[in-house]
Length: 257
Image (cartoon, rainbow, N blue to C red; front, side, top):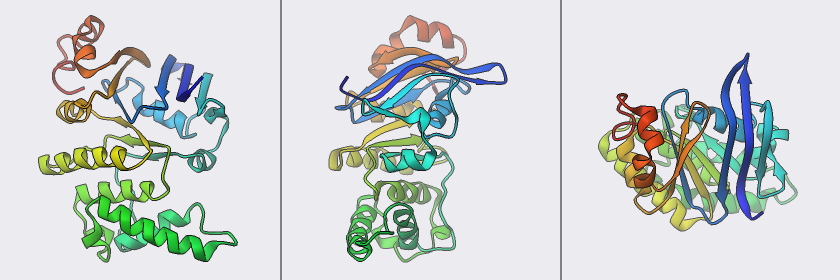
């Protein structure tokens, strides 16, 4: 295989309820963005939970870079191999400055070593560059608690980017944002894939946001009742009769996903 992520027959059961049912998913190494859509309860967040070691599957395989078995690893070990997740609600340290938040995030992994001083210097440069990329350079000295909701979301993404993840998982990055903040977030995602080697996999319910991200030809995966219902371009999945039938009368195809 030559895949970034290979998910085969993934099943997750919570006291008899199948949150994921024999789910199969492949993300190629050349992909830069993969969008996951589907109604609440479709299994999107559960899939992210498995990918990051927070939920153990009942059955199936999850291979990262062909050989790394994510299902057998701890969340910390998974983060160290380059799979990093942002949850829907921003998780920043409000009593620390933006720059201090970045330092704390960078320090979680690789500050402790015989080359600590050199890495601290290179981390400082990486932090400055990442804050500039996310439009937060001017807020570096401000307390994170004073940021707007959108700025907190961008700060948390910046905190993840400083470690140069291979697979960046974003759970509803546009949730609670104003329209200008959503437009800025779309531009930031485009900047991430243009300036780094990271692949971004994101869950989103806002279909206008999905359309704007998918306009560059990124693949969309539709989950329904714990399995993949359809996959391809956004136009293709929205025209898929299975998707239309599954969401008929619920406004899920042309409206919010």
